[in-house]
Amino acid sequence: MNPRATHARKEYEQAALDEAGVDHDPIRQFAVWYDAAVAAGVPEPEAMTLSTATQDGRPSARIVLLRGFDERGFCFFSNYTSHKGRELAENPRAALTFHWAALERQVRIEGRVEQTTAAESDAYFQSRPSTSRIGAWSSPQSEVIPDRATLEELFARYRAEHPDDTAIPRPSHWGGYRLVPERIEFWQGRPSRLHDRLLFCRNLAKGWSIARLAP
Image 1 (cartoon, one colour):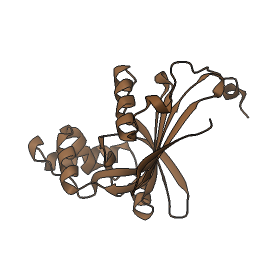
Image 2 (spheres, one colour; image 1 turned 180 degrees about the horizontal axis):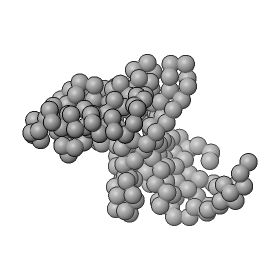
Image 3 (tube, rainbow, N blue to C red; image 1 turned 90 degrees about the horizontal axis):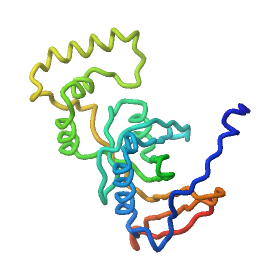
């Protein structure tokens, strides 16, 4: 074991989290915490770890960006043929993790994943900078390529094919995903490692329930 990590210690003392002070709709509670992270100047508060798995349970994880959320779920966008896209196609369940270290907070979200509608994907795609839209055409995401020059040549090719920034269509292999939450856990760091953990579970007939977990 590398001793560098084992010596790291931090006491969490900023805030508490209790059942009386939390919104009993976890989507609204997430909005409260997300807005607090933005107000606190947390770098890229929308950054989240997306964890997926193959059909036989082999996991993988990467950082992606939250691009919207509401009562339906949490949205992100990607190449559908990427590594994550292939895993989601064969096993459409995933987990998201937000870690806002400056606020000593973490949110874990689990549920099933579905593709957003074509209209939603089109709308988000057209809101992106033109270079990002060309990038979506240019990158065979997660595939092996010979070198950096290959990627730059593909970008130049697609840029030449779409010189008009207002007329760059969305590739059919690129679009949005929505994680429809079934479990949402809010974690607030506390002293002596007695952290607060509140877990919301969704019951389609009864709505959201809330329970406290041991740290």
